[in-house]
Image (tube, rainbow, N blue to C red; front, side):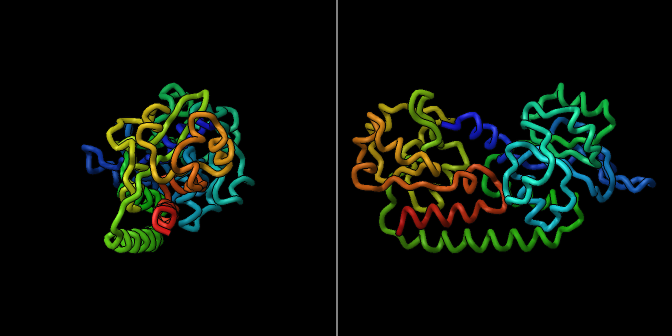
Length: 298
């Protein structure tokens, strides 16, 4: 049920650039108009002060670059970077874990922005090509999305645009918080990430999807879970009021033995959502929050 894709997106979705190094001079541009940052591997990465040819190795980074109005700088992406739609016209370097070194070399970018799932061996191969690659640090909170947007904007020298995006997101979050403060009941929720023969997976209490459920005025039945692996027995025992599932999976879920007798299935409270609104911690995350609120409190 798309488990591998989800976890690949998840790893990339919860990334935030780590700029701070022990050496404050690392942020100073050199005489060659270069700039240096310290990434999550503790590497000082030097690249063009205002890079014009960027490969994004994470869907969240891709969405942010476009939201900032700088999609024209993108010359490469991963197979998982599919929003906005026009990004499909950009050359792909392959997967996020196993990109093509040949494709990267052919593109010859000024900078690659990757996430921490990027294998160190792969980083070493790219360094041999003399191509700057900044590896990102994992975060798992709603607020870290704002940080990521700011840092990408800083690389692109469009900080004021980041402010506008974040103001819009915070306004949407504030609106949802105001509405949630007035609700009298909080329905119990099960967020389906995987089900069936591959096992049952949902968002535990230590995930950012759990945060979204709570922020939207719901009660996550898996709040006591750490991680993602659940069981159908627990799901049947909790029998949630509402089930959230990715677009395209509702019908098969509702007709599968073990799930078809759940209260939410019987009462028609299984709702499909665009999973990218929840799995990618980018500019659309606040829209995902609004969508979730509208489902839980119609």
